[in-house]
Length: 600
Image (cartoon, rainbow, N blue to C red; front, side):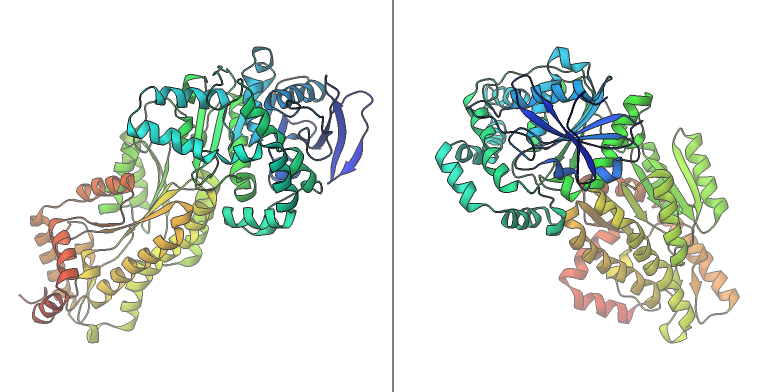
């Protein structure tokens, strides 16, 4: 419902009207989206305006009725005078007035920075809690919860406790400068421009400057809106050391950047004490997530809104719920290639047993289906696919289907591979290329297909690439296989460096002598069919006697993912050879020239 008699005009493709608050402030309100959908308020902080949501709103407007608001002192809203005229309490009052005018049932709120801080104020007021259905909080804590967290740790002054509080307060120390009346006005009026601010924030967030959306009133907003810092520090009610915590019954989802320079995510540790339902997502980003990760903000908010609306909590939201006992990979999605047998099947079983939903694929559809069935019998959840990793088109289609049906994976295990042996000069080019296509290009293709989505999501993740002890152990008659695995090793090193900023890790797993069916299916060049069969049986029996089974490798992979390890030699001989090849490379090469595994 719209306020009776409101002045309506067009601005930024949204209907704008003003809501007059009890203290006479005119709050600019912008409405867009689906008039029949749930009402969602988009609230901003300093020095932004409703334009903060320019990249988020288009992702939500088809489904929801969106109400954007300019805070008092910002945008087209009026700016009252007085020391406490722009404060979290006053802004919370404004939000209550806007809700009363635009909705006749509970609304959902997505708020950032001081808009989030003020919304915490709103939803901890008993009369207002019933008017808010859900709250997605971005980079803006409750001052009461923060202060209680700080006091609690200072009363237990261990080095860690004191260090965390000092670090959190230091991050907020800039507010002291902004709270000094004349100094802050001079610094902001003459030291900050829209262009300079846009460039600085773009550099800090690692995004293009055009993704920083500022209002046309920015130069006014950055000065006038900064009064909120003064009111916050001078009021016992909101000071970050003296504020009192209050509980809320509103379901709350917190999004906080791990690189946020103003808010430390550790300061949210005690929030579960004051909330009923809480979800917390640590994002590999900075402070302005609506600019850097609009898709994540929109998807996270939509998941909470729909969960509240339908009473069904999806896996992608359930994973971030705070205060529940969870298995290590509960509610995560893991994709495993070559999962029809051997290390792939064992790894899929291990992740499912640790709580993950698993997408298993194999070039043999019956084998992947059997893996999924076995996981299901054990109480896990798995989805089977046929996939030839050597076919780039199939890999891309597989990724699109998995993401559409199940979401972006949290862990990608590139296990699919084939074996090959034989002297280089006796190996046909087609055979050599086939090994590279499966063992190397298959890994590259899967990473290309999934890593972008994992990185852009901003929630981290891990890519596990199966190399081999052969990656750092030159051997005669294994040029094709060793080349492919060595290339996977170096590719993983390069990819790890590129994805580091996004929080997606890369683990290179190097098994040694492990008994899998790869030994029984290894192709041998330069020998007859009968000799090839005999060699396959010989090495299969040799690896079986070694007694190192795929489930041991799978257990090691899970530990490596949990710890975020980079290079993981698995078997004892792989560990020894890894270090030996680094410290005595000449001896490694000499041994390769003198010895051959095919000589008997």
